[in-house]
Image (cartoon, rainbow, N blue to C red; front, side, top):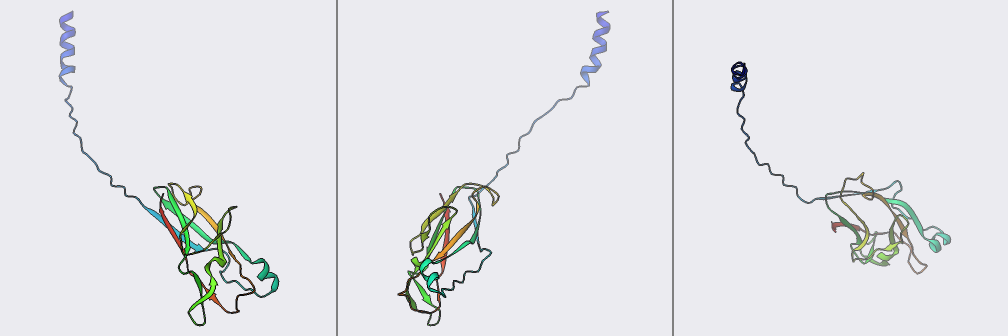
Length: 164
């Protein structure tokens, strides 16, 4: 009886196949990236100082800038002006109106006056623009005093993002 069993098992084991594993090495080259998009919010960036009250209190525009960041690393957003003073729109020459007349803030933070030195306004982490903290608005405030001569002025604002 044992011989029969052995004979019955022999054909089953002879049908077994050999297997072989071959390895293939794949390589992913993921480079660091940071993408910054700044757009003008729902309001225009024109300020009209047309009354004593407006000159005394200044003008604030909520969400004047909308910021969207995509990054695979922690980041830091800095703001600055490209010149220490506004440019007189009529003469295209530097004026006496200082860039510090404009200030920005994120959320409930403090307004940060603009100057030519980069100043941190926000930090964040990895993720797309849907990541909490990578999509936000910045409020813009303009303040002048009675010593400023009437006219139209312009100033370029720089947004610089770097790895943190």
